[in-house]
Amino acid sequence: MGEDGAKYCHESKQRPPEEVRRLLNRLSRVEGQIRGIRGMVERGAYCPDILTQAAAATAAMNAFCRDLLASHIRSCVAEDIRAGQDDVIDELVDTLQKLMK
Image 1 (cartoon, rainbow, N blue to C red):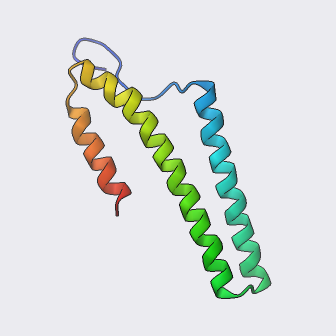
Image 2 (tube, helix red, strand yellow; image 1 turned 120 degrees about the horizontal axis):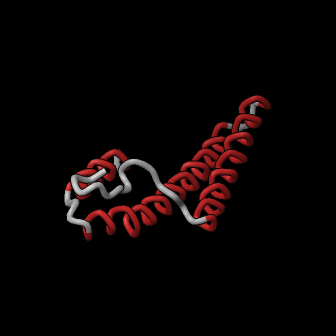
């Protein structure tokens, strides 16, 4: 909580049901892709075929991260800045640096 007792997004996030559904759908697709890749490895599939599927799974995970990041910026970051909690900018920069490794 902030000094004035207000609760900021740093602690938790109450997501709208539509956002939860969208994020879970993306994760389900990634899970399916990973299971498919595992099956390819178990069956001894050709390396370039596995790599192509791995790249698709990576792209799907990146899409999940972009969606979640956009939501975070539009809600938590914007709300915290409006409330005078400029330290959220440093947190955002740290998060972006981790994503760009």
